[in-house]
Image (cartoon, rainbow, N blue to C red; front, side, top):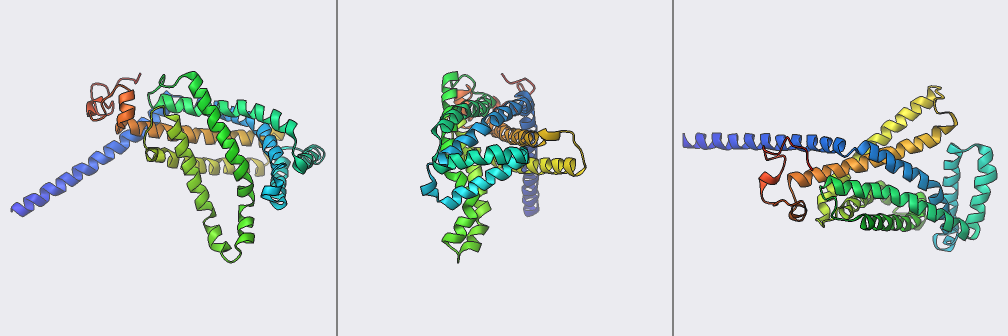
Length: 328
């Protein structure tokens, strides 16, 4: 009898634990959705996408101009692969005549030995627009954590600028490797090419998650463990993949269906849509991380918000006196 009573109590406790976990999961989802509406992530994603689009042409010119000085380092075949990729992408946006008479000669001149004028002007414009797009991310992540005011405007701009410069340096190094990576592996290690190529995309995914996690980690004014930002990075990557798939399906249907809704602006609009999906995924991932920190606060962020990390009544999701009030 005692054994059956103990078994019944254990089963009841297990069921209660499952219910609590489901309730917490539901609160996490609803809290994340509410945070997205509260901080207008759709509008902020549009702002970030616009500045990212503005920064793309001068950024690409600046990167290509830099590659002209690094031909000996990367090799002529890698630089040629980058040139072909740029021409292919340009052909989807511009007319064939513009590609043949403007883009191709410019690339040939730049890649022949570098163009300091293109590098300087292109990077100046790209630095302004690109760092402005990153500033949207940094500022929104800070506000989502309830830590607005802990980092001033100047420090926020410096951080955004620094992150963008680091991204440019990584882009200069990684762009040729991403474009020509599989062919380089096949030439360097022909016997082990097949197993290594199987690892190509998993490595790209892991690096993408690490990059997003680092962006979230550095954007929070208070230092927290790096791993705490992993959930938002994984969600952002999954949403980006899903959103890109839906966008591709929509654009393919629009083109194959004979629709001329966008006309000659179809490719630039597609790029803008894709940048918007990217920005939206990043901001939703940030909202998830912020909501996790509110439900299970880290001591440093709790103190910065004026809360006690070990006091559950300070969590607006657990305190019935504050659950219905808007957060300040």
